[in-house]
Image (cartoon, rainbow, N blue to C red; front, side, top):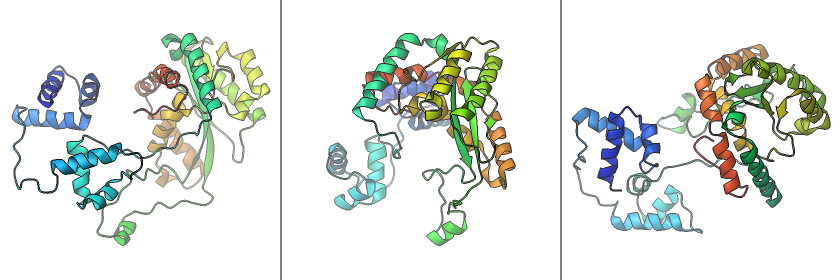
Length: 346
């Protein structure tokens, strides 16, 4: 589809009340939502979608030859593809390479992310278990499941090196303006157990100071999950999910689940090394951590208070959106033969 046709279709969706992220999906991501934002902004200002005539000097560095060279470099399996390396190799500025990547080739930068290293056995098990879930878990079952996890929060807090940027004249000035992220060697910490459901989050379960998660302690956590699930679903007719941590897969924990939950996913059926299948891992924890004001934390009680406040900011619309991607993730893992899946919700 031509660019003009895409613009016209995007504006048609906009006039029908759609927003840029929705329009991007409707266009099968053939145009990035930032591009759609520009089209909408131009349309609002001028009432027209005609391309803006370029002004200023003609291109001198961003030539067709350079665009093709960058395009071929991206296809290479052996050559380095960073913008700075290409700028040096092609004798142009880094900003020119970035413009070629973004404006001429419609590429966008993505930071590397950490994922579990899977063996062939892990992949085979992940695929077979996802096949089982596809056959046994429908949309209604997913919406009546509690997904759970435990996490240690520390006063070292949430740090995103990609977004936490300070603009300054030099490194020293940047440091003075908050450009240094200091990590304590022995930070204040607290372990939290939490569950997410279609009807919202559970209350948090805070471990006592110095307590660690083992099979015996986990029984107390399971009793807590049981009470919270009955409260959120207003019955005991729901399914319990947990990951493959050793405390979860112990005979003590598995027997408790069999005897006290009306339905649960046993350890044999939950795919190993699969954080991209647990809504707590692939979304909820990160969202909570971003909402914690770590600057206010001076002791353990402060940290608990901030976590509680952050949890209250998570609404039902968010939890439903997060859980709504679960089945598509199951299908993707099965389709990709048990390999790791990466998508926009991760």
